[in-house]
Image 1 (spheres, rainbow, N blue to C red):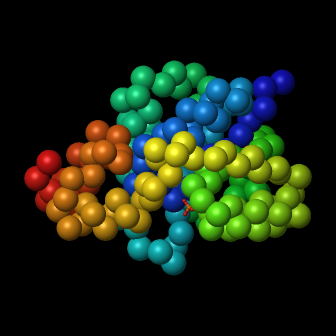
Image 2 (image 1 turned 90 degrees about the horizontal axis):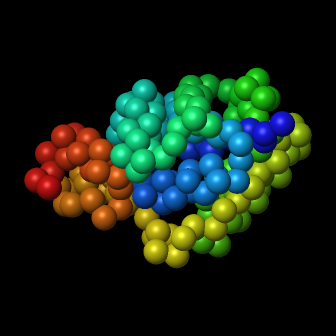
Image 3 (image 1 turned 180 degrees about the horizontal axis):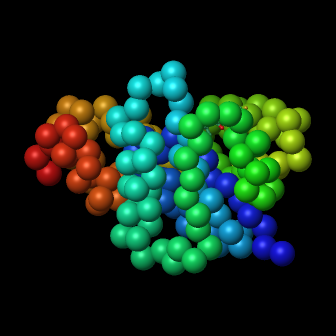
Length: 166
Ligand code: PNS
């Protein structure tokens, strides 16, 4: 039976770093659900539905075969609970640096304590390790070009949102 993994995140917005992790996870697992997690305590640039549409469009833009892919939004509740509901046994995450790793180790431990769901951490490609959604949001909101950091469809959506020129 193929192993079903979940790649969760805020994806606000989806970056080239996220795209790389999604591609690599698809090469490892037989089935992959990309899960946009909505944090009710955090104001988002794009609503969860728009984010998932931008993830889907980014993967299409990258020519990724989506036969083994699913998309989901988690609006409330525990991630591991949703994993169990959809039959996923692994969570996959990208790790860019030591700070990420420390945070992810703690989350992986709690998630494994809460359920039998394991976490696989993928080190970010060095050339993508400096990209973060929060920096992309900041740069885009100041009207500057973010096309080096995000898929074209995401850059377009950010330009439409913030009135960027490129
Ligand atoms: O892209 P992000 O913001 O780094 O993603 C963090 C996310 C959404 C994966 C994490 O906050 C999460 O798993 N939230 C779901 C709620 C939950 O299960 N929390 C307990 C985890 S210890």
